[in-house]
Length: 78
Image (cartoon, rainbow, N blue to C red; front, side, top):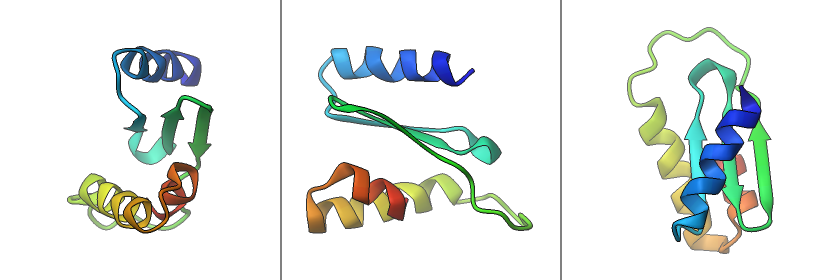
């Protein structure tokens, strides 16, 4: 499954995107860049409600990316 998701990220990058984040809900997330693919495991805990989780991930990534310009570091904030 992860190989297939990486393949989709590479396809999107090939079309001109600089960074691709694919959320896999409770299975984590993948960041694709021209330098490679990075996987983040989900945080352990009890999910009370997942509404807004994707928005929060994008906000964390964007805020840190604007500050640092480093996509891999920003991915840690997402």
